Image: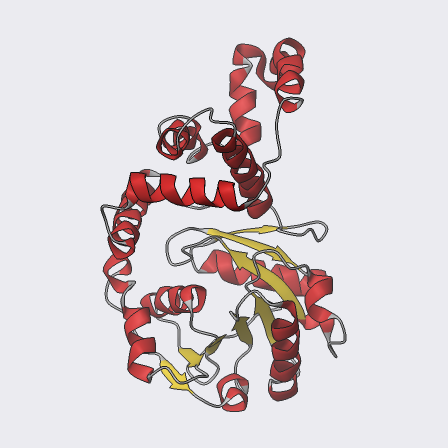
Length: 303
C-alpha cells in the first residue's frame, strides 16, 4: 500500500510544539504539502516562527505550511496524520479518537509518543489497526531515526517505506515496549549517570565528557552490538563473549538505581547550571543543531 501524499492530500501535523514544529520544517524543506493543526491562544505567527527556526539547519522551505484551526478541516484530506500532542495518555487517546472521527477511512495516524505503547494509545479507539507508533528521536528535523510499531504489518510497511523515502532511518519493533528502543537505552544510561552523580563519583560535566569524548564518538557510527563485535578483535563477538563476557556481568552487578529525592534534584540542577549556565538554552540548541548537521555530513548516507 502507498500513502499517496499530494497537493490535494497533504501531510497533517496535529500539535505544533517542539516535535510538531520540527517535523513540519523537515517535510516542508523536502517539498511535501503540510497542514498544521493549531489549537490554543498562541498567535499563528508564533507557530510559523517556531517552524521557521529550524530552516537554517535545513535550507529554505520548498513550500509554506497551511495553518488550520479546525481539526476536522486539518485532517479530512490527509492520508497520513502525525499526532504530536503532549505525552499524556488520556489527551492522546481522546485526540486519536477525534482524528479518526474526522479523517478518511483509509487515513493512518502516526503517534509521536516517546514512552506510551500502542495498547495505551488505542484503548477504546474504533480502528486501532490504523494507528501506529512512529517515534522520532529529537530533533526529528535532523536525527534520522524513527521507531515504528503497529498491529497491521502492511500499514507498518507503508509507514516505514514513507519515512525511508523521506531520508529517515525507520526501524520496526517486533513487539510493543514502553519507551520503544532508543529511549529505553537512553534511560538506562541516564539512570546510571544519576547514580554516579549521587554517589559522588564524578561531576555533571565529567560524566557528560566521559560520553561525548568516549563511547559517544563510536556510537555515532556503530551500535552496541557492532561495537562489541569489534571489541573481540579478529575473533569478533565470539571472542569478546568468551574472553570478556564475565567482566560485563561484574559491571552489571555494580550498576545502581539513584534515589530520586530533593537532594539529588538540587545536585543535578547545580551541576548542570554550573557546567552549562553561561550560555542560553537557545544558544545550546543552535550549537547542537550546527554540530549535528556537521556530524551528519560526514556519516554515510542512510540506506
